[in-house]
Amino acid sequence: MKRNKIILGIVAVLLISVAACKKITTDKVSETDVVSAPVIKLNGPQYVSIAVGGTYTDQGATASDTMYTVVGGVTFDASGVDASTPGLYPVVYKVKNNKGFETITTRFVAVTNVLATENVGGLYRRTGTSGPMNVSLVTRGIYKTDNVGGVAMAGTNPVTANPSFLFDTYFVQINDSTLLVPAQPWIAGELYCTSSKLRKLPTDTTIEWVVRNSSFGTALRVFSHQ
Image (cartoon, rainbow, N blue to C red; front, side, top):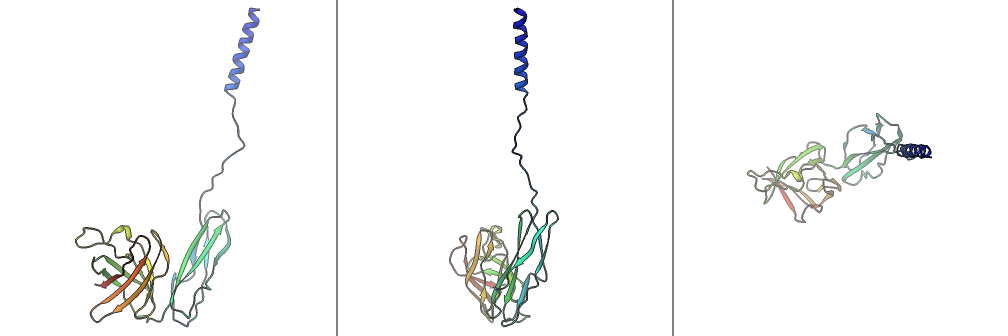
C-alpha cells in the first residue's frame, strides 16, 4: 500500500512537470514589411516657364524602386495648366509600388509675360521689424523665398530671421506689378498670400502681401530691397 502511494506521488509530479513545460503555440504570426517608396525622376526641369498664350507640353516622368515592383507607372494630369491665364500651376505626379507605398512629386509651371532678363531677387527686409527675406530667381518669372513672413528673431542685433519660420515658399511674377503666391505646403499647414504686389520705385523695389496661414496675423507685410 505504501509502495502504491509512492508510485502515485511520482506520477503526479511528472504530470505537473509536463504541464509546466508545455509549449504554447499560436496561429497568429505577424509579418513586417520594409518600407521602400518609389523614386520619381522628372523628365526635364521641375520649374518651367512659358509665355501667356504659349503651349505647354509635359515631358512626363519615370519611376524606380530598389526593393519592390513599380505598379502602373507614373500618373499625372497637366490639364490644369491654363496657358492663356498668368499664374503658377502645379502638375502632380504619383506612383505606387506593389506594396502600396506611394510617392508624390510636383512640377511647377509659370505662365507669365515677364522678360527672361527680369530678376527682382535679393535680400529684402520687412518694414517696421527689419525681418530678413531672401528672394531667389528659380527660372523666368518663378521665385523662391526662405522667409515669406519676414519673421525676425527677437532681440537680435543686427536683426536675423527666426529659424522656426524658415521654409521655402514659391511665387510667380505675373507682370511688372503683380505677384501670385499660390497655396502650397508649409511647415505649419497650407499657406498662400493675397494682395501680392511688386512695386518698382526709382529709389527702391518693394514686395508686399498678406500671408494666409494660422501662424501669421492678417497685416499687410511690406518688404524693401536692400
